[in-house]
Length: 307
Length: 290
Image (cartoon, each protein chain N blue to C red):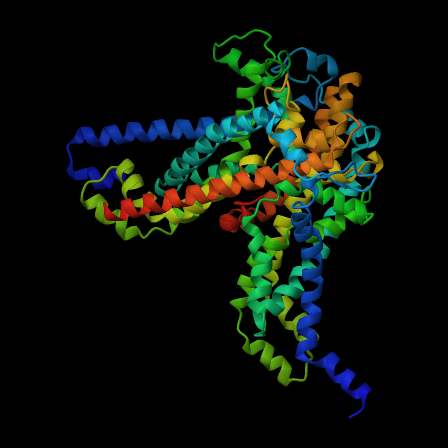
């Protein structure tokens, strides 16, 4: 067999097909999704403006970072939003999902579709719509408050520090909870009906059914959701970037907007090395919290099983 | 249901439950209103004149100003961005479908050494946040010369949802009978022909699912075009609307901007009403990571 024949055979072979079919996906995946993660271990130790070559400065960025009060303030805001919005998004979703699955209201089907709609709206629309809704004079938020008798006058929600900080929770929940609702509905539907039926024979109330049957059975799903909510701790800053850009006076600043400003801000100096250092710290913090959370949840589960 | 069960209890019980049901239904209806009201407000505001806009939120347009839509489309440049978005979204979907379609077919249908390594190499980063790569991703795009280019963003979109789509598609393709492939081989089809004529058509439902999600990811994406595209001529809708709203501080033509919001919502509403089932049923793993 000559070389040419062999080559021809090879192109028709299974081995070639496997290699040729996996090469494109592996190439794109590695280049665009893996390489940035690897270089995010390198740039934090450099000073890099994006134009001249990066200069190795070892731990200098981290020294600055630990003394950066703005950064830790932004991080505190991340925890604030996470601690408030996540439980709302979680428990509202759980309760509504339970009701929509278990109560045969005729409007239930329609609500499932409608409630999820804000979740698929482009975040830029959600953000701009709420930005205008909070407008002191023309916004619908004050108009609604007026209509229910709570007249706040011409109050500009997003220009008052404390008000802006809390107001941001509304669009976060408005567009954020319904994904959880659908996941909970899927999980609740998979709970065997027989469990509920025997509980009903014992005279269990709806709340008892939720806490004693549904939650233990869907606990694994809930654990996954908690895990991903932790991963999202520093994400979802688009709403803030668009609506307040971290203002007024840093009241709504989160790490994402802060990092964005440092790397791409109007200040003119693109401190990529420093921004990347912040990214690496976020990664470390998330890793730590995830590990702790999982230890904790596993123990919780063990107690539940024993009890 | 609750009524039937508590039937053997005292009558007061039945009534209490009914009151509870009414309260629940009122609360659910109120939440529906909280969702619908801002949307309706955006729609009727987009039909006002600017004078009517300044008269307050409840003020209805006396005559529907459809001209706002024309101005948003032609003068504000929504039309141009709409076109950019169409190119971006279709390009990203085509490239991504090619990549995961071919790759997942092999991962699902062939037993070969290293298959699990390849699979977990891809799936592994599902559990790692992408947040910290905002800067390094930008640096990479710059080094590759893909900044400020719709083509560059399409390339990036091809890669962006690989992890999630591999999870969905490999899972689906594993569930299909291998006999069909083997029958094709016996008929003399090559591996490529079998992939094209048997593997892909069989996976059509899963390909549709991932592309409904792809559509929403690309269409809604704000961060990447904001980072990667500088030239306003090349803005997709999301960034275009954002920059218009910034510019409106000086122009104060709010009703035209609101018409722009509505235009951007139309494709979302269309896709959601057509593929609502695909979206709400396949969400279980998908929604967890945006």
